[in-house]
Length: 207
Ligand SMILES: [Fe+2]
Ligand SMILES: [Fe+2]
Image (cartoon, rainbow, N blue to C red; front, side, top):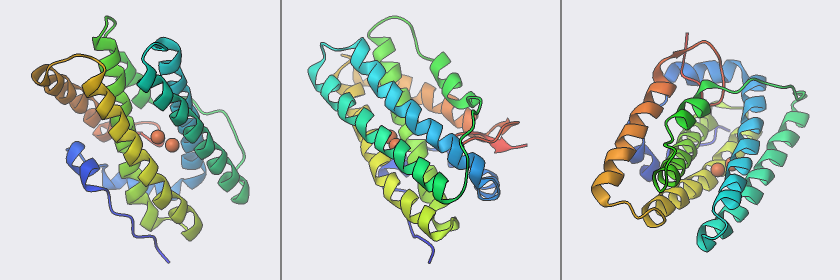
């Protein structure tokens, strides 16, 4: 039975630009690659969380949350790997998609803007992952659809944490915050809608 997993309202409102339907069609045709890249994304999410711990160890609330987040993302990695095993999908190296690199390039170098940008980029990636899990779930084989239906709740929570820290940890006023968020949202929207030669979990419209 198909899994009904609507995109949570907070996520749909945050991402003004939805994933193109053509990407969803492509993903359903290319499940092994999608799973492989999804596993990589979980690993990168854990590593990003650890990066905050190394960079900002004196920020107690942030460090505690990121430590927990890293463990949760590693658990997701293990879960994707076992689903891959069940589906006989072998692990291979995959080049990184343009998405994370494109967002990373937008991060400013001086503090506190660097921290703000990294937290907002984290929020965008989590929100987009959540949206894609929700939209894929009803289209996938039952077991995978159920797994994605469960994951989207975690990613929605991660999105909330990143946004909350972006608001509380950086000392940026509301106007500057909104202005920067809009700029990063526009970059993110271009990355997921513009034609993309590669297919990845966060790729753009298939060419
Ligand atoms: Fe995850
Ligand atoms: Fe996450």
